[in-house]
Length: 178
Image (tube, rainbow, N blue to C red; front, side, top):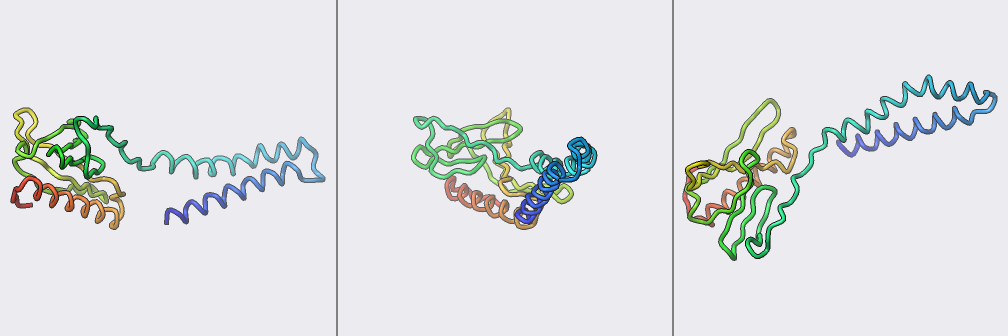
């Protein structure tokens, strides 16, 4: 669907450029008449074409930037957008959008559970980790790599969340209930 939109956008842009070029070089019209036609009627073409390019750029989903870990402290064996595991050093890195990021040892994790929120047509998938910390005992790791506005993206985020849930259960040895 998105590819079809891109093709239509390029087609409309090409047709608009062809119309402007044909108006500017049309024979039989004076240069001023041609310029006036492009300026007046071009407004009905320019703004919709501009909207076809600007609006998708504004609402484009950008993946979070990858974390640059110090290799002497943490070298991820397996990584995702907001979570990574270093099996060699027995460390876990998590990023909670509300709290920041943190490195955890295996024994710092008390429990793990999966969770999701439904707001309208958007489903947000996440892992919730209860850790040994008095100030911030609950950390939430979101799984938002794929668009949650579509059923397929929601299922892919849920599958990645479940995969990390199983991975963390095996790593910590916890037998928590979802």
